[in-house]
Structures are given as C-alpha cells and as structure tokens.
Length: 296
Image (cartoon, rainbow, N blue to C red):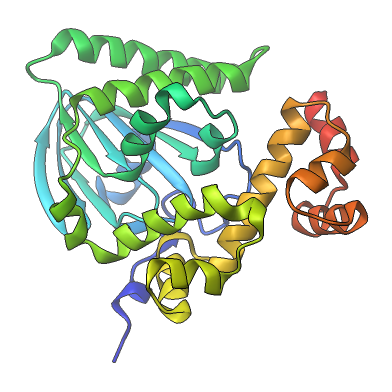
C-alpha cells in the first residue's frame, strides 16, 4: 500500500527542494511573485521547519489546512506551523505577503513572559479574520510592511528587528485565534505526539535522553515516533534531538561570552573536544569560527 505521507511534497519554499538549515532563516515575498507563476494555485505541500504567515490585504483564497478546506476573504492572516499540509487557490491579483521563518529563529531568543502565547501561535494552524477589526489589521499590515522593508534593505540590527516584529505579529494572531480544545487536539494524533515530543526535547535534551527514553515517556514505539518526526520535519527523532542541542549551542555562542568548554559541559558533554567535533560535523565550522563569524 502506498504511504499517503510520501505523496505530499516537502519543500523549503514552495517549489524549492533545498532544505532550510539556517536557524535564523527569514524570507518575505509578496503573494503574487510566486503564486502568479503557478496560475494562482499552490498545490498541497508541507515545510519541515518553517512557520509561515500569509497577510492578505486584498482578494480571496481557498485554503486547505490538513485536509480542511476554507474560503477566506481579506483582510486576514493565515498562520501555518511547520508540518501542516497546506494548499491555496488565490483569486487573481490577490494582494498580500508571505512571511517564512525558521521554527528555531524565535527559540534562539526565549522570553518566558510570552513563551506560552508564542508557542500556541506557532503550534496550531489558524485563519484569523480581521473584517470586523480593521484597526487591528492596519497595525498588523504596518508591521508586515516594516518586515518587508527590513528584508529588502538590510540595516544594522536586522536580526533583532526581525525578531521583535515577528513576535508582535504572532501575538496579534494569537489574540484573535481560537486555540483548539484538548479533545480537538486529540483528533490529530500525529500532531499531538509531535508537539509533545518537541516539548519534552526542550525540557530534557541536556539530560541526554535517548529516543527510547522519549518514546517510553510518551507511550509510543520508537518506530512510530520516527515516522511522525519524518512526516513533520523530514528527520528522524534522533536528528530532532541533535538539532535542539545544536540550536542551544549556537545560542550560547552568539549571545554569551561563555567559554566553549563551559558551553559543552552545560549541554551535557563530558569532553569539550568531543563537543567541538560534534559541532563541526553539524555546521562545518568549529565553535570558535562560528562565534567569530556571527560577531562580525
């Protein structure tokens, strides 16, 4: 029997198969530039590690999110977390912007005060109708324009500006979105398991939990956990854990002056030299060179 998951294209950006490896990846483009090339119809596909926000100011779109089809009028914002299968059929000349951001971008700058709100905005697909809130949409649209300008004309502090503006935009989405009830979340078993796994990884990756540890804690088999991770990220569970360790290592190197050995120990490595080899294998750079490059 054919595996239906394998028939769904897994893209970086639509039509582009190169994986997104940059933890600070941000891409912004107008809807017309890509959609018009495909006669305004984007077939069902998914992204392994990208959150997408469509800010639509004019036009209409038929959108499919995880097999649920909706007709949406402007003004609206459509939020699509990584792993959600989605497709669009836009009315010709639809005006709007697509913001694609690495799932890890905001994790690099954690802020406990807004963590839950941002997590909910990043985990659940949402269609937010602003027809009755034109003032709020104007604000969101201004934020989007500022992001687009920052993307096209880089200036000092670009990454920090992206971070601040994307957080604000996500919070506007969260304030208007309806978070699924617990019983509704359980209807999508794979998404529930994947979110639970990512949450546990965030909590226990420094304790060197193995894939069997996570699977046992969640009450699933290792093979099922791997299949779910492959469906949402294109990677096996072990690779998701390794990516989280690398993300934290990069965060320490970019935003602190801690010695490499101290970072290694903090991440659960007993041997700093092994940590350096691990880091170079994953990034192609030594921790020292990575830090120097990011500081320029």
